[in-house]
Amino acid sequence: MIGAFTFNTSQRIVFENGAAERLAVHAAPFLGARPFLVTDPGIVSLGLHAPSEASMRAKGLALERFSDVVPDPPRVLVQQAVEAAQAHGATSIVGFGGGSSLDVAKLVALLLGSGEDLEEAWGINNAKGPRLPLVLVPTTAGTGSEVTPISIITVGEEEKRGVVSPYLLPDLAILDPQLTLGLPGPVTAATGIDAIVHAIEAYASKSANNNPVSRALAVEALRLLGANIETAVFSPGNLDARGAMLLGSMLAGMAFANSPVAAVHALAYPIGGTFHVPHGLSNALVLPHVLKFNNAVSAATYAEIAPEVFPALAEIEHHESRAEHFAHNLADLGARLGLETRLQDVGIFEHHLPKLARDAMKQTRLLVNNPRDLSEEDVLEIYRAAL
Image (tube, rainbow, N blue to C red; front, top):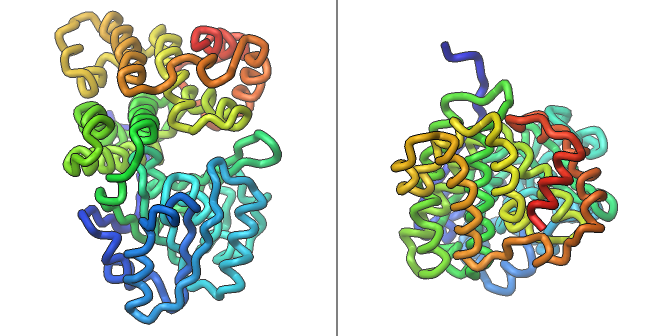
């Protein structure tokens, strides 16, 4: 029997090579006269935003750009972006870039459209809305932020805090594989592993809203990501592989937006917040060890999806053994892609672990979705295994 569930995603999706050059055409119903583009300095230095901006200006739109987004964006930066958009008289928000830019754009659209206080919007379904029209254009294949109702912001020195609300889903997501051609290998690898984690955790999530749609999307995401991640890293000009990664990332985003992620992310957030390790790499560092911990209750579930990433694992009949090999293969994949594989490789050592474990236990909205309950001592042991 199929239980009750809800499934939300972005209103409209355009997947097309060169779509960013036609942003004004695709987004015409949403932009209004004064769009406000949110991005980061790296995008501007590469000029990736230029064709999209030119398309809007060619339509006579009064465009303003905010390009100060940084990784793990802090609360004060969101406020600066809101104030800049308000001063511009923004009629819409266009998020252009990686997950951080899209997360900031979501909150700018929400806070400017509703006038609400961000302090009251933290958490799940606390945002009141409405928001300004919102268009999101990802330039990495990893976060899936263009189809998720989630924005993660750094509060204080280290804490990561989220707003989760359907109001954060955009009116339009534009996926242009050409935008990802210039991604360096390490970024391609880390963001690709991030997307794989999204699909794995969505499929195995203990959430009451784990549903057949999310599971089907997760399976297709894993098939696309597993088959293309190494090509995308080592043959970076392969547009077919880039497109498959971008699509796989989006499908994984759809999956976990409705069947939420769990302990891998809960343990990764303190690594990123305290040591400023990129999110995808943070996930990759703990992924195999969380899966091994979960195998006590989830081996059959992991065995179902393991061959989607590594087809050769279909030859292993016993699900316990297949699940164990799945975790090992994921660790090996990270190494083959050139990623750091141990916490000590990113400057994390034994004396750091107790604080990381305490901070991970604060991620209750994620830990409740993990297939196996974790104590603080369990988390500490997982970190130790990852050293």
